[in-house]
Each structure stands twice: as structure tokens, then as C-alpha cells.
Image (cartoon, rainbow, N blue to C red; front, top):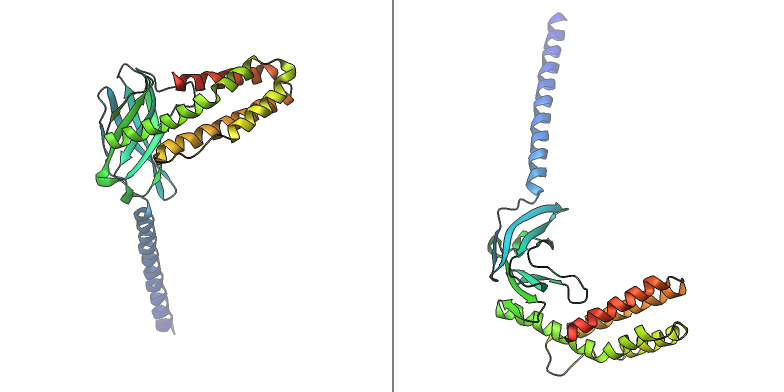
Length: 249
């Protein structure tokens, strides 16, 4: 009986040891598998096609199973930038300041976020500042991407020319006429053309973006006036007029 008990005890110890070892191996395998699923982004080369606008570096951070890239740029060109395009392979993202008063000012640094991407979208692990549009209306960089920026600006400029008289009149109208003037302005914006025969998709995007921007801001101004926030409404209205004036200069 003692012998039988000893054998059983020995077997129990062996089984326990085996289970512990198996557990350690399984835990290690699970941990390794988990790490393997995390995206590992290797170093990404960053270049610029624009003299005076430098790419200082690229950082990446995880967002779920995707990556967000942050491209750090410095504008040493001597001119303010109103739009820029960053490219990797056939994928690109454009940062646009054309419908606001701000810009990528000379001497400043910009951290531009690139939307989530899969590693297969980053062509050769390289990101390029492909083109920029300066505040004076000129563009530099890859001819294809520079033309896209120029076409988009052209669409916005044509819409600005259509609406600028109404915006100026709106800023100068009396308080009692504001509601009626706003409704008239909104109706005129809705009549703006969004297509033009022979025009590029980027030109038509400029037409559409201008209309959306105007409608959104007119709606906000009306809401502020109805809430009796008259000073804020007037300031927004004047800013809107200045932005569209800058597009036609």
C-alpha cells in the first residue's frame, strides 16, 4: 500500500510539473503571438520637393491596428503657405488654409497628421512633401500635385468672385435688415454652380468646398444673431468677407 501511494504521489508530481511547464510555454506563445499582431513600423524616409520647406522627421503612433503618422515640417521659404500636399505612393493628403485667415507661416514648424494607413500603403517606406501653394497664388513641387492645388484654388476664387458683393453688402446692412439679407445671401449661395464643362475634379472640389463653407458659416451667424450674440455674429461675418476677399486678390 505504501508503495502504491508513493507511485501515485510521484505520478501526481510529474503531472503537476508537466502542466506547469505547458502553462509557461502556452503563456509565452500567447505573449509572442500578441506582440506579432502589433504593427511594427520601420523607419520611414522623408523628403521634400520644395526648396525652403524642410521635412524635419516622421513619427508614428498606433491607433488600433493602424498607424497614424505625424510629419514635422518647417517653412523657411520666406512666403506663407496656404495649402500643401504630402504623398506616399499613390496616396496623398492635403492640408488647406484657403478658407481661413491662418496659414503655414514662414519660420514656423507644422506637425501634420496623416490619416490611418496600412503598411502596404506606404510605398517604399517613403513620404514626400509633394507640393505647396503659397499665399501669393504660386505653387511649387511635383507638377501633378501643384496643379491640383492651383485648380482647387481657382474653383474657390471663382466662387468668391460670385459672392463677394453680397458678403460686403451683408456686412454693411443695418441690424433691422440683417435677417432678410441673410436669407437672400443664403439663397444666392445655394444657386452657385458646382460643375463646369471641361474643368478638373479639383476645380469642382474648390467650387463645392466654398459653397459648403459659406453655408455653414451663414448658418452659424444666423444662430448667433437669433441668440442675441450680435458682436460675435458681426465678427464672424466680417472674417468671412475678409477670407473671400483674399481669394480674389
